[in-house]
Image 1: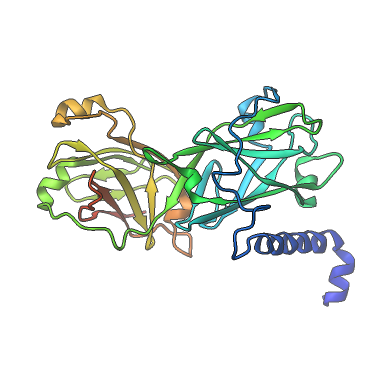
Image 2: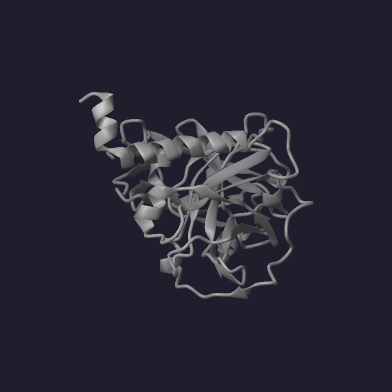
Length: 324
């Protein structure tokens, strides 16, 4: 089949491909090397509230069908886990609709650290219009271009965000369930703290990794679930000083991500004798593709890096993934 006949027989496919390329072009076009006041968002041009709008309730499971973050600087996004790059400026894009009424919204905001970042809304997405059943317009794509500092708070970085759609009449706001943030990080120049391995390992316990079997003495994991998301549960402390960590990182396939740390674990505080907070646990659900090689198999190992309160990193704690 030649190109001419292909385009004649499949005009919709060609149109969708053209729209996708056009959208990508717009994303690069609207992310100039010099930050512009009209598109770039920093702390000086964000909203502090959305009090002008009434709240419209939609069931959580239904709302999740109406907003999708497809990609960021750090790569593709799966489900409610958004990848954030180590860049000083962040771009994310996707699509969003008023799922209850099957129509476009008039705008979109991302809520983070008590502030509301307004996105650029109205990019053409006829592919999604057909998929979701939007009635009267295909301009439902969005992107956001903002300063990384908006994600930072007193604890370090925000662990989640929420999205808010303003309805077509600009009277109602529809609020989403939380989206988890996953930060791609560069720890190559961090100072290292030497602790005898046998002692340091007493401050880290991996309790679950994708429902697999964990052999703590061998630091091995086998029979990891085939599900799209891998659950990771455990706890970590600075065993030398009996303190919570400042940050926790996970490394796989030569990429490092900062993960959400600080879930409540009073049992660990009592057992280990932590002096301050008992928020020393971690409980994650990460997309499986982050751990996959190019052929779809799992990587052969993962590593955890723990950062103490002074910003020093311990030697990595490695777990081998075997018989998976």
